[in-house]
Length: 328
Image (cartoon, rainbow, N blue to C red):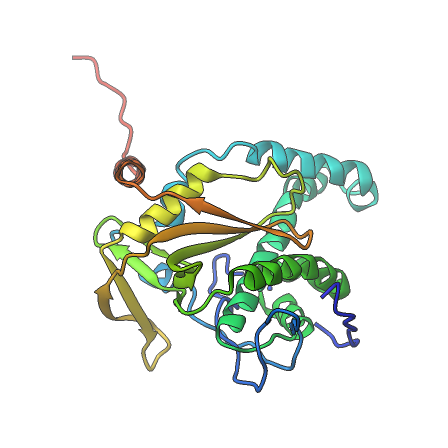
């Protein structure tokens, strides 16, 4: 990381959109290495990432539940339209060579889709940070270079990293430095990773890390990354509260697997165990972090269920055929 004098070799070097692609949100292969400890932070080794099922319920056709992400997405998030407009304007001004010579349709298409590549790249940073955190929980170190190279090759969201691997590593280091500080300050241990939760007929979701012991309490945690450097921005307590509330109040944890044909199947369910505290680990890529406590209440759960009911109604009418009224 930035303070450890790392050097990177010149080896060559992606998040699911429609097709299911590899996600690196889980464990790494076993190596004789240790996660960060105070005074001795090791973040680069020769571990090789292995894929883990990400949102397996999304591959099941006809399920009655909407995902937690879909439900919260029914609520407008302030700033996103303006953020997309700003990214497009910056690209149009600073990179005219990439669109000025195109015909009108091609130029418009290049400009209107640019922000998606920017946001995908930022989402890939979050994916990489999740992989690093889960590797540390497993007692392993991470080869950041190998991780970035693999994601650039295989993760759709990281496609813009191809040919710019060193830049991606440099950006990632600032986030990992912040994650390292959180790890050293709070000394987390235990918990489960990437549990799928469900309230049958209502919602499903997949949470980051649950049942983590730190500060004398059990925590349900979600990791968030942002490129926004202003401390008062990119804070979405309402959405975060709804998300963690849904995870905390779900009826059950669902275990999934793959059958002999590679098809996702449900293996069984188990009780959703409560935690004492909930929080967001927030990384801005500046080498620091913030841990924001989130309060899960009956009111926040009712608010989430209200959104879920809105989503259910919208789904019921989305294919309704409109027929003009006839004169009687």
